[in-house]
Length: 335
Image (cartoon, rainbow, N blue to C red; front, top):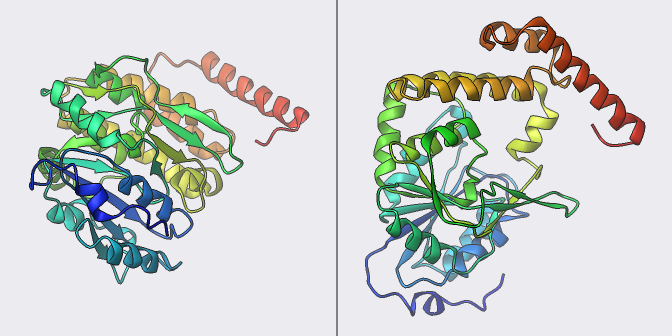
């Protein structure tokens, strides 16, 4: 553990006693990564108080021991929620049922236990931006995608200027439009989420729901600093399971279509055009991907394609993807 940073180092520039930001982190078997995640919180330099709330969902790899060690070193900053049994597997709402009641900040910042922040001024800059765009309740920034081999790519880059992203663009962008570790939103969104989940119990996949509901009605604030890192295909991550567990992947893809239908109804059909465009993008990404079963791909086209997608288009997309796979195999690329 890096003990160079003390609580007094973090709090010495705070100009009030009231917590402004609740940093929330969800952890499950992230023992290899969680220290780097916590260090990203502790390096933050702000003129306002923040708290760190970490929820461990009954990890079995020793994550809880690491978290407890940090909580002992930073007792006034870090609050732990240590579960004895896994709540996610039971379909429970971890954010709303367990984390939200512990949050005291007017704003919520998110970072999962296998991602991390790299800018010591991230929170300060992002809160300043949100104060400049008071009509928007959610904000985000680009992030660095990091693969296991060390290769990097920039995710969610939308230019070098601060701006408001319209709700329709967020809908079309899907759950990856705002990297989770980049999101800061106003605490009032928790109430909207609670109302949403009461109206639509047990919907699949929460990222896109938070992003769309957070963007209603005035859009999302974007600022251009690359202040976080997202681990692509980390052990136990959603992205890795999507690549290695076809049943899991197919269920999640169906969930994306279901969420679009729910969000269309929730927004009183104001964004039906964007929802339809999102469905077409999902079809383009999944309905012609040979990784999925033929039955599944045919089901997607049967259930979700519009009349605009004709037989020729389906033939063309399948042929294009088969050629792409053949070229990768010939060149020795992993498929």
